[in-house]
Length: 356
Image: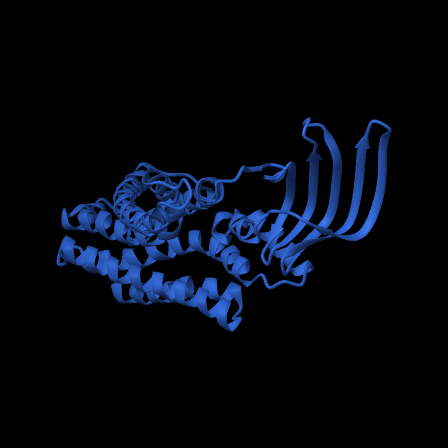
């Protein structure tokens, strides 16, 4: 995609206004997030500084979620300012057609789509997971570590490595290493899966290696009781929320949950929303352009901002509402993610017809 000087000027104007809008929206969301975190201050070692740290780490997720709204408001402000200063009229007088202006905005929108997609995939999940892990460690006061090999936790004199944690206190691929008082490894256990039943854990498809001075004694068991001190509530807190996962991990999570006979609607909604959000960014620009072209000099900056906020709130509420419908009423997750963007695309196309 080739960007001319004309394209870069329009894209730069829109991008600057969008970034300024993002800063305002994300700052507000961090403030509200900090207020929510205050309820947990005092639990375990969780202090005010920790609450602020966790709230700030949620900023990348907020950027991803509100980017379409920020793009709408920013485009109305940026393009509206160009119209108010007669720049769009000057461009038309210089030979640039309305089609070329729309094409320049579309190119800028495609760049924004790519940026928000990469941000949602690479930055937001990692930041959100780091914040969740920090909160959990401070509040639970337990030695818990997430690594590329799953989750590690101390369980009395044993160390437990859990490769996969599923909702409903279900574990998969568990390793337990038990030590004696001399810190010598005495028993290594591997189980394919484990479930919490009542007041205890049950392991299934078990392989154990008992280590002593006489040698290593190995045995296999179909199932056995696991007297672990691990709290199912702690493990539930460790379960990665849908918003914290990139698309490829969401897909794998959905597949694993389906294979285990569990409902994966929350994760399916998150999966399709992650795909639809970049598209929604481009759709928002389609709404801003015809409004600016039709009212270049007769609408104040305050009116443009107000319109952007109203349309942004409408999109946000429709988006959240469709997600709720998908989860509660088992509506198709793909349609729930696409309908808000499709609805606003229809509005944008209608406004284009009126702007001719």
